[in-house]
Length: 278
Image (tube, rainbow, N blue to C red):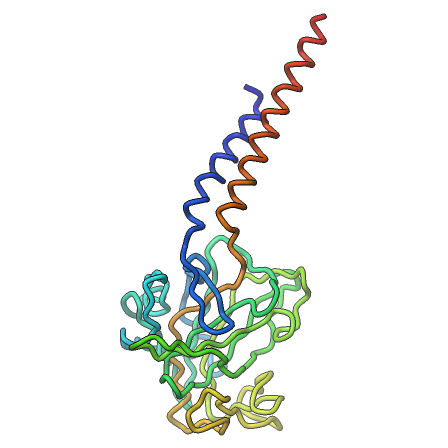
């Protein structure tokens, strides 16, 4: 068999196998819709000095990250960093000390999609968010974005869950180009001295300066007010990438297309051989 035809047939077989892997049930919470295979699955602890997660990272209790059977709990941050078990998060620092993590999707670069590109779950309390910031590494420009703090916008209403979710857009939040690629993101808690460029949220000015006080947003039970000194130990459970996963029918159509292409190449090659013999 021609080598190129064989490769096409093998590829079509792999796509056909992919049909079953695309059947993961979506997890929808408010405007956030993700799937289990969109969970970032590699994490390590930051330890880069006073302004970069300098060791203030501990295990968080297992009952805090959100409780859904549609999620593989082995992608929780405590499990990935080696600090705890599946479905446990990491507790970051306090009002004076930073703790942080670096997270990626093993073997993949992240690209911009419509709307928010990543979602971060934080489980301080059902009605009491805790302050954390995110930045991303742009492999196209070989540079980090600024640190960004945003309000949580979605709440998991499932029984026993305390999770709030914050979405981040590579374009509007980090200032990346639409075709830029991201290798990893970093997350760390804010400390009391930090300020932001916007009204309660925005680009973080580490350690203060002329910025504005961080506020907790509308999901906070006490309203959009400044954080108390006890609300800087963010509890991060999971990080999701919002890239759309193709439907099973899409995989099937792609597989069928490759099979038909391989068959067409085979027929064309056979006709050419017969013509040469004539």
